[in-house]
Image (cartoon, rainbow, N blue to C red; front, top):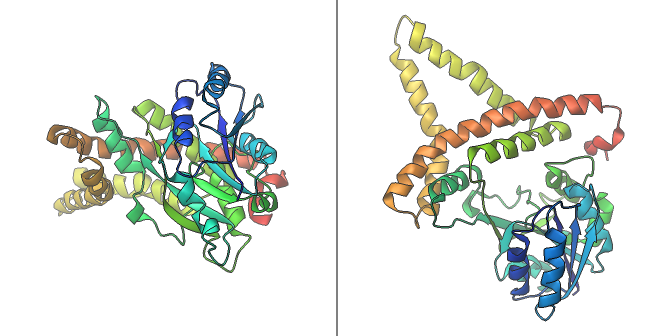
Length: 345
């Protein structure tokens, strides 16, 4: 069965060879690789061509397309349209794929699973190196990324770091939403699921199809990332309840507890209890993940990582609260554009 791997990239000159190396060492090699560059300003395209010239014995047919100004959705659509295979596997630049990534990702089709799935959801894990940033990166991973045991396969919406689908399903979905710069893979997932409304999900689950990626290494880049994610949520009108709960927590519950501590006439200890319980609930699951992810770290590094967890959570929440209304405002200004009403499509 012919499988096309597609990738969209932008300014990945320093990291693209790591991804290509991991593709070259797959136990099930792709039949072709189609890469769409969004108009990189660095040496990405030159690095790609140099790698291809020197490594054709290891890689299958590789095509590099350049679409200046293309966002990630446009880049994926361009690459998929150019792909010749009936099965499309998608990953992102900046990741390192496990050697069995593609083998596991296409296994439901290879094994004759019935009913034949429209798509397969792979998984992603943090790539944590043991260096001076390990404590922060490990805390970041534990705070923002799920582990396999956190996933309900019937509800999981895969990241396009690790996903596969039939080209026919992509065509029927309308492709990745090119009007959306972030959260685009969620809208695409919804469009795939809508093709099999009688089932909990149209995605078969392949947790062994793992893409490893490096989480953000400082608070500034993390803030920017989560601000953009939340702005994308607002543009796409996603997760209203989640964002509302966050505003209520920070805008109502937290001030009420602090106010009780400062100005309450009776039982101020209840305010302390409320804050303590809330803090434990706030950090409990990330700390549990940290116990697993932090095993390569020293005892001191694990303590430092545990202290980073609440800071990362607060910064991420504030970034989301800042980005979401910006996205909503964009959506209101474009309210007459029917393209963005993805629920009606």
